[in-house]
Length: 337
Image 1 (cartoon, helix red, strand yellow):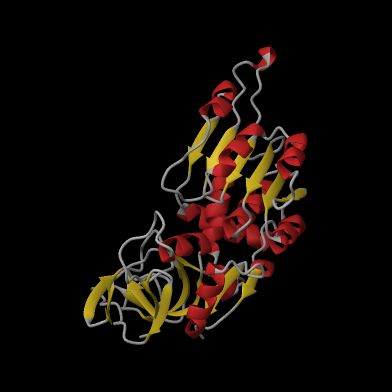
Image 2 (cartoon, helix red, strand yellow; image 1 turned 120 degrees about the vertical axis):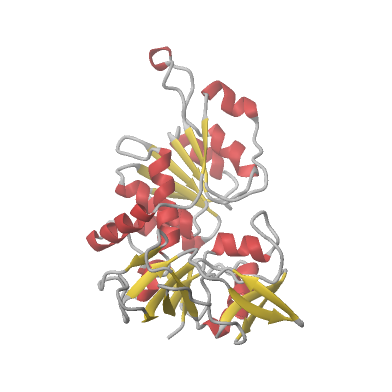
C-alpha cells in the first residue's frame, strides 16, 4: 500500500511498498479518505526536533477512513466513516535494503485495529472528510483554551497562529474570552482576525511588543510557537502586578503549547506576578465530540483554514514548502480518494 515516509532529515518519499497492517481477531480495516498534516509536530520530526526519533519514520496522526473490512458483530460496519489518531496496528516497510516496523501513522492508505478504542471515533454525516482530517489540531487548540481558563471576563493573548494557535483562539472566543494574537505571517493574521480575534499584531513590526503591552495586561498567554525567546515578551504583558485588594489573585497563566526541549525564561519576570506556567499534552476523546458539536453550531470553523488539498503523491513538494515556510500555507490535508 501507499504511504508517506520521512526517510532522512529533511527528506520525504512516497512509497507503495508498505505492508497493510496485520489485523488481529475482531479488528477492522479502514481505507484512508483524507489525512491532515500537523505542521508543528511533523516539522519537528522532519527537522530533528525534540519529538524526533530515528529515521526512517511514517509521519502524521490525523486520519479519516472508511471501514472496508469488519468482522461479524463488530460495532463498526463496512462503509462507515471514522476519525482516528494514534491507532493502531503497526506496518512494515523497506528502505535502503533494511526492513522497518513502525506505528500505523496518519499518512497511510490503509489502517487497522480494534473497533472499540479511545482514539477511533465514528463520524457524523455532516462533516466533510477534509475538515474531519484536522480534528486533532482543532481539539489540541480547544484543550489549551479550556485548561488555561479562558472564559468570559478573561483577556487572552495567543502567540503563534499556526493551526493550533488558530483553533486555540477560536476556542477562547467560543468560551467568551477577549482574544488577541501575534504572528509574523499576514495570511495567519488575516485568518485569525476574521474567525477568532478582536485584535491581531504583526510580529514583524518594530514596536509590536510595546503595542501589545499597551493592550494588556493579559490574564492568559497561550504560547504555541515553541520559541523560548518569546516567553519573556509574554511575561511582560501578563497580569499579576501586586494589588493589596487582590493579593491572592495575582497569578496570570502562561500555557506552554509549543513543543521544545527546554523551557527557558527570566524568573524575575514571573516571580513577582506569581505566574502559573502550564504544560500541554494533546486532547481528550470527549473534546472531539465537543468539537463536532461546536462545528455544527458554527462556533468553530475549519474549512477556510485549509489552504492546500494535495494528493499524497505531492508530499515531497508540500513538506519542502513547509520547511521553506511558505507564507501562503496554513492547513494541509492530503486527499486519498
